[in-house]
Amino acid sequence: MSAASQPKKLRRSWYFLLARWAAAALVLGILLYLLPVAPLRTALARVPLTRLVAVLLIYLFALSAGVIKWHMVVNTAGAQLRFAGSAQCYTSGLFGDLFLPSVIGGDVARLAVGISHSPRPAAIITGNVADRFLDLAAQLTLVSIGVMLLPGSLPKALQAPARHVFFAGVVAAVVFVLLVWTLHRPLLRGRSIRVRRRLAQVRHAIRMVGRRPQRLVFGWLLGITVQGTYVLLTALLGVSCGLRVPLRVWLFAWPLAKIAAVMPITQGGIGVREAALVVLLAPFGAPASMVLATGIVWEGVIIAGALLAGLTAFLLQLTGKPVRPS
Image 1 (tube, rainbow, N blue to C red):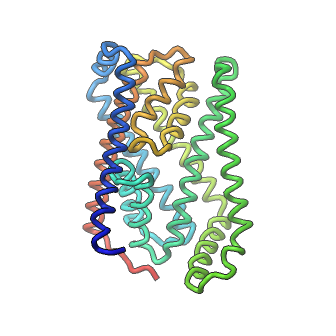
Image 2: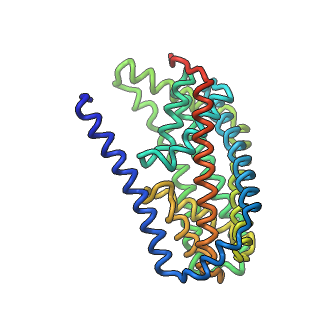
């Protein structure tokens, strides 16, 4: 890439970032326009500062558990990362999800930092993909638990979409595994020595992960714990806003809203997540204004956590010692 094209590409990236933040503001603006403002303002005013701080602290503790999970998974793939390096990778990803100009900015930041700290870049990539699948499996598990706890009260309009999301996630995971297993040999055939070496490293990392399924199971359980903690914290904020919805309903709706927020429409899924929650909780009689208020407060917790994660990554970078990948 020429030196002249680099500033142009950088400008496009920042334009893209601003566009996604503008999209988030637009979605929230539409929700504010469609919903009555007075109940929303009242719900937001009901959240005590002490509870908000407590929720943020518990959220940061859950993020620490996420660091442990990511550290375990990538090292299972052979990354040979120290815990401080994993913490820097993970916190960089959290900051990048909201503040980097890319659809997958968080993953890009996480991989870039991980590769600078690990002698095995392929293990970082493989471990990060495995960690993402564990998060998706944890969210689908929570949806399944919510569906099982709502056999009689789940509206018929939501039964089919819930089943479709669950089976789509399962099918996607199975198809991915089958593709990797079927195509790994054709991908190696006819390639250059350098490409073959890189692909062989990826295959080795996948084999290392496959040899320790108990770690994947533990990572899945840890993922359920982390995601379940987020559900509980959101429900607690909902109670503060005056929204009283059974926990089993949150177990069903919250993971689906988070999966919907993965769509590359807004930065960090802001606005999309709130709109999905309003739609998913409406059949259960949840007032839309209170749902939106809960979502806005939760977004505040996420943004505060991302900023603290960015600060943590910066401090860890000052004290860390990157290695030269072999």
